[in-house]
View 1 (tube, helix red, strand yellow):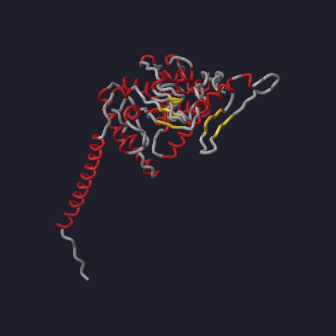
View 2 (cartoon, one colour; view 1 turned 90 degrees about the horizontal axis):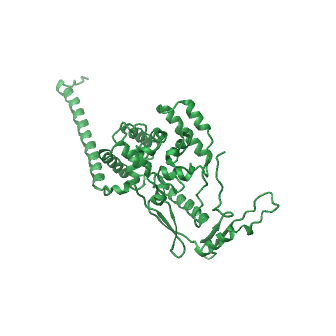
View 3 (cartoon, helix red, strand yellow; view 1 turned 135 degrees about the horizontal axis):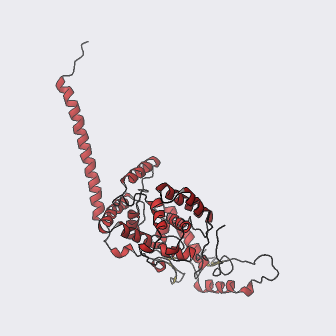
Length: 370
């Protein structure tokens, strides 16, 4: 059997066909990417610069649909200029959140590539990870908190616009005044007062490292409730600062070993405190179960939610008066403090009308970490 040999002309056409095919695929992919960015750009939110420093409070209503409480947003925010912020705090944020902040132009493409690879490997195509400080500011100021690629693309476009409009120092200042630290505190000044009872300019390195670790998950790292987790996160920040050359290992070790003295906890120091805390916990559970949002704390505290509850304001106020009366909790001769708790439920529909978890939530002592 005689095999036919391919002509030289046929062999020369094969590489050309391959190159042509690759070129077509490249053009199609480029067109798709451009089209997606054009679509994202066409649906961008209004460029409202006031959003760079403001936030919407979420409101809690009682069973008569009367306003019972608001979850802190801009009410607990005090603006501070960057020259009043300790260098340690700025360095801590750069180290833990965006080590290339002063090098990139709003977007860290290497970081995005790493995040894409991680998402592909995990099968979680929600566009998470690799957000620069500029992107975080754009998301907090202009966008919702869902984990969708369209939002991520808008975040990138807005980050470029922020970098083209403002200097790095201006972006850092807006970021530090915007982000949420937990405990109803927005911005570093409010956070410094909430956790340490001092002006942000007076923060020490250990305090700066602790605060810089909170925004990733303010609820999980809240030092009033989860001191060990907060300290572990603080250590991570200090290690990152060593890696970036901002401090040496000896300084980091000394900072980690320094006891943290906290201001009186204000988590429950509000009207209807126990009831509101329970509402917050349940709301966060609901938001987390939806798997739609990248940061449920931001959604709850900054997106202007309207939360309707079964709270009976009159009954709750009456129970708080009873629990606040020391005569109802005689301590004479007792080796331990007398405490009590109460839940009032409407048996017809299961609504919780009033809730108390202990005696007088408004008299919490100063808290010092172990």
